[in-house]
Length: 311
Image (cartoon, rainbow, N blue to C red):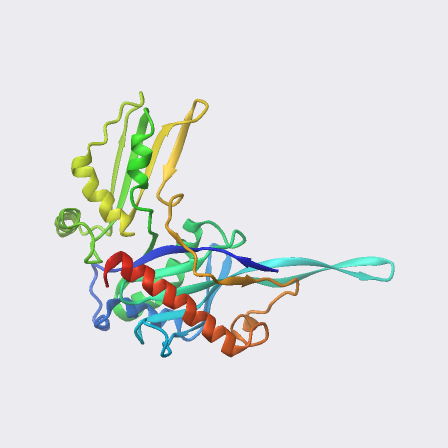
């Protein structure tokens, strides 16, 4: 079956470990390229008892009709292993077998702006689960080589936070989570404040939690907007608890309002159980078609990113 699915927009960050390593290499000139050590060659890892894999990642080179630069974008797949129970009919009985069922997500990485675009699939999990899987796969190799930890966060839709605040009369709780400074485009005031705290405490994350049991929490635009702009670049997350539609309470989060992008990519599903090797092979899609499809997706991603950040 052919089905179009949007890509969720994520950002990744590299935060230096406080404990120095004598064997650590300096980060590349383009800092975002540090994660290539985790993506290539193909590798598997395990998280919470589940196997994952990075498959088929390579640099995407433009052709004469493309405007995106070379040696900046990389494409491949992150895959999650599930066990499929298949019933085989034999004379007089049904025999059940367990087979590997890898769930692949097409993934595009912009090493310059440290942006990751991942095609969504409910079988893989939520946006938070995709971020956690990517983070766990990238962190070990990058830490070993560069002594930096990798964080992956979804990029919220701009203005969604204030839409929630302005359309609800009861505000019970506000939670802001901010990653230590990493990307230069973020709000300068928030960046400087978090940097000053990091110099004092050495934290990787800064969390701010406020609550009012009667629902009378105040959220002033100043200085809240500075931190929200910081989060809207993908360097953190927010959660707001308001009144519900029919009484009770409702939680709104930046994950629920993660930015998505339609790259016009079709997802090809088949009833046949695919092996891990087939995810990167030509068995299900000719190599030439796959390469042209990747260039088309990267071109659209590049135009979206440059239109957003001016990179």
